[in-house]
Image (cartoon, rainbow, N blue to C red; front, side):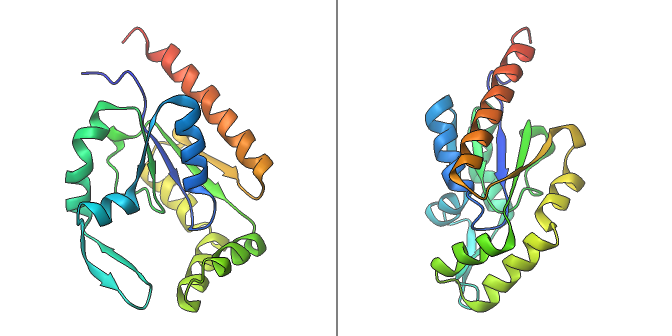
Length: 175
Protein backbone atom coordinates (compact mmCIF):
# COMPACT_ATOMS: atom_id res chain seq x y z
CA UNK A 1 0.00 0.00 0.00
CA UNK A 2 1.37 3.40 -0.99
CA UNK A 3 1.91 5.95 1.73
CA UNK A 4 -0.30 9.04 1.67
CA UNK A 5 2.33 11.06 3.56
CA UNK A 6 6.10 10.91 3.20
CA UNK A 7 8.74 10.04 5.74
CA UNK A 8 11.42 12.64 6.32
CA UNK A 9 14.74 12.09 8.07
CA UNK A 10 16.17 15.14 9.84
CA UNK A 11 19.79 14.36 10.65
CA UNK A 12 23.02 16.07 11.57
CA UNK A 13 25.59 16.31 14.29
CA UNK A 14 24.21 16.70 17.82
CA UNK A 15 23.56 20.39 18.46
CA UNK A 16 22.54 21.41 14.93
CA UNK A 17 18.88 21.85 15.84
CA UNK A 18 17.31 18.59 14.68
CA UNK A 19 14.74 18.31 17.46
CA UNK A 20 13.74 21.97 17.28
CA UNK A 21 13.28 21.67 13.51
CA UNK A 22 11.29 18.43 13.91
CA UNK A 23 8.99 19.83 16.59
CA UNK A 24 8.19 22.93 14.52
CA UNK A 25 7.74 20.89 11.34
CA UNK A 26 5.41 18.44 13.12
CA UNK A 27 3.39 21.32 14.57
CA UNK A 28 3.05 23.01 11.17
CA UNK A 29 2.40 19.90 9.04
CA UNK A 30 0.72 17.32 11.25
CA UNK A 31 3.48 14.79 10.55
CA UNK A 32 4.54 12.68 13.55
CA UNK A 33 7.88 13.54 15.16
CA UNK A 34 9.71 10.34 16.08
CA UNK A 35 12.66 11.06 18.36
CA UNK A 36 14.91 8.07 17.80
CA UNK A 37 16.71 8.79 21.08
CA UNK A 38 13.39 8.46 22.93
CA UNK A 39 12.55 5.23 21.12
CA UNK A 40 15.97 3.78 22.00
CA UNK A 41 15.42 4.64 25.65
CA UNK A 42 11.69 3.94 26.03
CA UNK A 43 11.59 0.72 24.00
CA UNK A 44 14.96 -0.51 25.31
CA UNK A 45 16.57 -0.70 21.88
CA UNK A 46 20.05 -0.60 23.35
CA UNK A 47 22.77 -2.78 24.78
CA UNK A 48 23.47 -0.55 27.77
CA UNK A 49 24.97 2.82 28.62
CA UNK A 50 28.37 4.11 27.49
CA UNK A 51 29.85 6.00 30.45
CA UNK A 52 32.59 7.70 28.44
CA UNK A 53 30.22 9.18 25.86
CA UNK A 54 27.24 9.40 28.21
CA UNK A 55 24.91 7.80 25.67
CA UNK A 56 23.08 4.57 24.89
CA UNK A 57 24.76 1.83 22.85
CA UNK A 58 22.07 1.34 20.22
CA UNK A 59 20.88 -2.07 19.04
CA UNK A 60 20.00 -1.08 15.47
CA UNK A 61 18.05 -4.27 14.70
CA UNK A 62 15.82 -3.80 17.76
CA UNK A 63 15.42 -0.13 16.89
CA UNK A 64 14.29 -0.80 13.32
CA UNK A 65 11.89 -3.49 14.53
CA UNK A 66 10.43 -1.06 17.07
CA UNK A 67 9.92 1.65 14.43
CA UNK A 68 8.92 -0.36 11.37
CA UNK A 69 5.14 -0.58 11.73
CA UNK A 70 4.68 3.14 12.35
CA UNK A 71 7.17 4.29 9.72
CA UNK A 72 5.70 2.06 6.99
CA UNK A 73 2.41 3.94 7.41
CA UNK A 74 4.19 7.17 6.46
CA UNK A 75 3.87 10.67 7.80
CA UNK A 76 6.89 10.42 10.12
CA UNK A 77 9.75 12.79 10.80
CA UNK A 78 12.71 10.71 11.97
CA UNK A 79 14.95 12.74 14.28
CA UNK A 80 18.41 11.27 14.80
CA UNK A 81 22.11 11.94 14.41
CA UNK A 82 22.49 9.15 11.86
CA UNK A 83 20.50 8.08 8.85
CA UNK A 84 22.27 5.21 7.13
CA UNK A 85 20.48 2.52 9.14
CA UNK A 86 17.02 3.45 7.81
CA UNK A 87 16.05 1.38 4.74
CA UNK A 88 15.81 3.36 1.50
CA UNK A 89 12.20 2.21 1.14
CA UNK A 90 11.28 4.07 4.35
CA UNK A 91 12.71 7.45 3.32
CA UNK A 92 11.38 10.11 0.96
CA UNK A 93 13.57 13.06 2.02
CA UNK A 94 16.79 13.34 4.03
CA UNK A 95 17.57 16.77 5.49
CA UNK A 96 21.11 17.14 6.79
CA UNK A 97 21.35 20.15 9.08
CA UNK A 98 24.72 21.89 9.23
CA UNK A 99 26.10 24.52 11.56
CA UNK A 100 29.35 26.48 11.75
CA UNK A 101 31.89 25.04 14.17
CA UNK A 102 31.93 27.96 16.65
CA UNK A 103 28.15 27.85 17.02
CA UNK A 104 28.27 24.08 17.41
CA UNK A 105 31.01 24.32 20.04
CA UNK A 106 28.92 26.80 22.04
CA UNK A 107 25.79 24.63 21.80
CA UNK A 108 27.56 21.42 22.83
CA UNK A 109 29.44 23.16 25.64
CA UNK A 110 26.15 24.50 26.97
CA UNK A 111 24.91 20.89 27.06
CA UNK A 112 27.95 19.97 29.19
CA UNK A 113 29.15 17.34 26.73
CA UNK A 114 32.25 15.43 27.89
CA UNK A 115 35.35 16.72 26.07
CA UNK A 116 35.80 13.50 24.04
CA UNK A 117 32.18 13.62 22.84
CA UNK A 118 32.36 17.35 22.12
CA UNK A 119 35.54 16.95 20.06
CA UNK A 120 34.24 13.93 18.15
CA UNK A 121 31.07 15.81 17.19
CA UNK A 122 32.99 18.93 16.13
CA UNK A 123 35.29 16.76 13.99
CA UNK A 124 32.27 15.01 12.49
CA UNK A 125 30.69 18.33 11.53
CA UNK A 126 33.90 19.79 10.12
CA UNK A 127 34.57 16.64 8.08
CA UNK A 128 30.94 16.52 6.83
CA UNK A 129 30.61 12.93 8.06
CA UNK A 130 26.80 12.88 8.30
CA UNK A 131 26.32 14.68 5.00
CA UNK A 132 28.54 12.11 3.28
CA UNK A 133 26.72 9.28 5.08
CA UNK A 134 23.41 10.57 3.71
CA UNK A 135 24.81 10.94 0.19
CA UNK A 136 26.27 7.43 0.31
CA UNK A 137 23.06 5.86 1.64
CA UNK A 138 20.30 7.51 -0.40
CA UNK A 139 19.63 8.74 -3.92
CA UNK A 140 21.19 12.15 -4.52
CA UNK A 141 17.89 13.84 -5.35
CA UNK A 142 16.39 13.18 -1.90
CA UNK A 143 19.33 14.49 0.17
CA UNK A 144 19.25 18.18 1.08
CA UNK A 145 21.84 20.11 3.08
CA UNK A 146 20.51 23.08 5.06
CA UNK A 147 22.26 25.58 7.33
CA UNK A 148 21.03 25.86 10.92
CA UNK A 149 23.00 28.63 12.59
CA UNK A 150 20.12 30.93 13.56
CA UNK A 151 16.41 30.98 14.33
CA UNK A 152 15.91 32.64 10.92
CA UNK A 153 17.68 29.70 9.27
CA UNK A 154 15.29 27.33 11.03
CA UNK A 155 12.21 29.23 9.84
CA UNK A 156 13.47 29.25 6.25
CA UNK A 157 14.33 25.54 6.47
CA UNK A 158 10.91 24.58 7.81
CA UNK A 159 9.22 26.67 5.11
CA UNK A 160 11.31 24.89 2.49
CA UNK A 161 10.47 21.43 3.85
CA UNK A 162 6.78 22.36 4.01
CA UNK A 163 6.91 23.38 0.34
CA UNK A 164 8.58 20.06 -0.50
CA UNK A 165 5.85 18.20 1.46
CA UNK A 166 3.10 20.00 -0.44
CA UNK A 167 4.75 19.09 -3.75
CA UNK A 168 5.25 15.46 -2.64
CA UNK A 169 1.55 15.16 -1.81
CA UNK A 170 0.55 16.65 -5.18
CA UNK A 171 2.93 14.31 -7.03
CA UNK A 172 1.73 11.25 -5.14
CA UNK A 173 -2.02 12.01 -5.03
CA UNK A 174 -2.75 9.82 -8.03
CA UNK A 175 -0.87 6.80 -6.66
